[in-house]
Length: 320
Image (tube, rainbow, N blue to C red; front, top):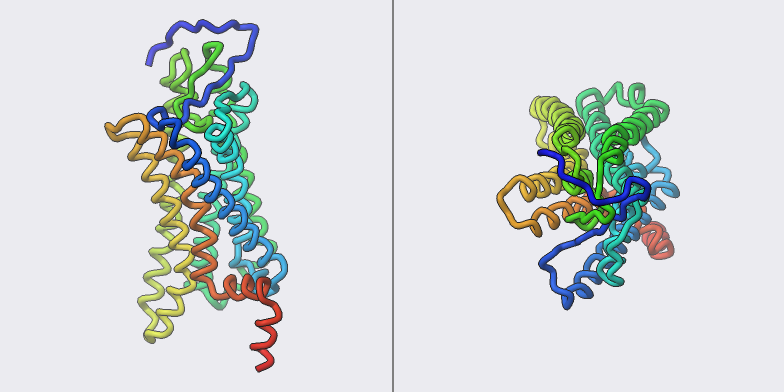
């Protein structure tokens, strides 16, 4: 795409205007606000409960529970975008400063990358637990688990920096209209009056590294897990092995389904509103469902949260 002329002054920073969903009528702003607020509160409460359960319940301190990373990520990921969406819907606050827009862009993509890499670490943990159970305590020590988690965070925090920095050096008008509910990299690049080809290509390359490489590693882990499970002779043993992976598989499916929705909404010949909704689904779907998956599918997490909610009742049942 060729560059177009900019009308902004070189001496002043541009102001970014979040268009939101163009076809959404004003009368629907308040109902949509309450829907988003409900989702956001569900994300905060659900993930905070899991964080608290992991901290206070000794059974959840095992290396297999990278839940504290996943829950913290879900809170940070949604907090980087949803409060601004709520402000836009309730107060009509469409504006972001130059620094605020690029900070939001960096945080959104960093936390998204972190989730992809943490899911890879969890897949490796499941591979060791199922395929090499006797070596699990030796391989997945607390030190190894911490090193894997820290590596995932560091790579994810560093990976978006080149794209964000180079995008910030592009030319913009004095008022930049962003056709999204937050400062997504692609939306900001498309709003620039510079040549967008290099930045679009860089964004595509980073997306491949963040999306397809982790997915390939997860699929490779589960291919080994499946082969190992099929060699188990007893039906009960196969069922127990699959049950240890079910929650993680559901989270992976949810995460990559939201990416697929966002990608199809962008690439398909659909109205602009569908592109924006696809991005919003990606920002909200996984953090909403993760706490539900782990509280409903994982008996240890469910028991820990029940113990926090009803300590007296649980103690009474244990006495009986």
